[in-house]
Image 1 (tube, rainbow, N blue to C red):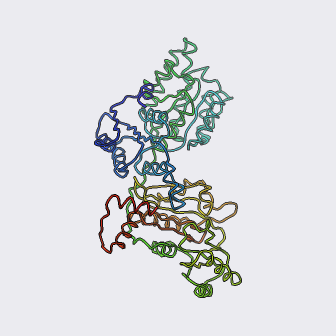
Image 2: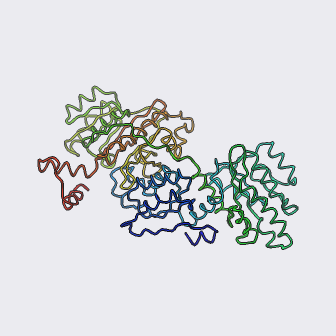
Image 3: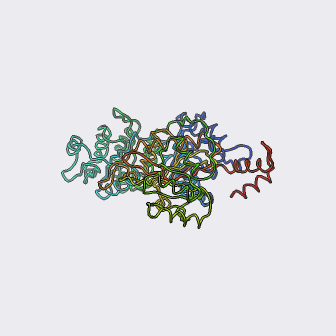
Length: 551
């Protein structure tokens, strides 16, 4: 990273390698940099995030001090996912949680050292844009078209300019020019190099975009034709002035340049003016896309409003009781243990009915759930399931048959490093196939929960798809918030999963759930019951043996 930064003209104010962190830790260093006047951007490479809550706090402090933090890490370990008991656990990775921590702290995770340095280069020269609207100005239709496609892939938007702005651009450019966005100069730069600056200044002052990417041959004129060195330098000096502080009524409009030359004197002059310049368009737009993510407001500080919830007993019936206490609606149901109780339950509930073996966690995989039961089939289905699975708590529920329903999942876990997290995603038995989830540190407020839904690929299903009605988003958001607060307020819980929660135009109904206590609490309870003594403290060897038994 230091080598890449040096080649890009970035200086290093402090360099720390913390090794095994036996005395000085990474978070100690982070906390010290918040007040370091020589540091404007912090590049952090970590392979583990022990004491994650303190790391988040340090990253938040850097942001409050006006410094940017870029995070590079490795590996979404498969090990923890394979051991997970819930769908949520198997679908979320270590990187999902790191991303959630970065969003909470206002930091940015990048994937490679090159991405980190590219983002730092732009941050060293300008501030993150105020929005996603980008103007693309090029001296080639092909360059502009490629840039527009890449911009969309990186979360940017190239809006069509207003007719007023297009008319003013036509006054500056040849008749063959394209002025809608992308702007194709159509050879105007060859006739008069100053057109690069004039067009860029006009677009920057329009208020119609949040950033500008200038792409193409600029930077090569003097390199290929020495007689044009002075003219090209004059244009770059003008662009340098623009990059240093041109403002619209709202905010500064950052300028990023893509030049087909990597190291010409003109490119060096752009860097002297602290105009970010890249030799590939994908690197330029990738860095700008990162800045957009970093420029968003960090999510509000979470506030746990619930009191600690009692850890429920094992099984689906106890999980139902737990969720209804959180305010999450569930179907009308009865708990039964034998054929007579089952017959009485069927008589008091509205068909069609669902039968579940309440003690089995992943019911579909073990044929422990049957749907669509009516008076003619219910008794035989119960008898078959009871003979196959044996005695236990069976639950009979009214089946949700509302039209226009979308199935999602809401999950909450206690991450080893960062603590409570909450997940929302596409649910049902195919949840792991679609792998469409969004993760945040818990608890979340309603705004953050709504943002989680907006990040889902399946988001459009909630607004009505192919003639279906829009669902009750408020009910879904309330459920996400409630689950997030419960996991944050209850240290005795390891997992909460509601899958699926069926959301329709008239509300959200949870139709299956799993609540898992922390292994340590299960072990402690078992030890107390075995010894008959409250407060028994296990030795390290006992704890390890107990954990192995629980797993």
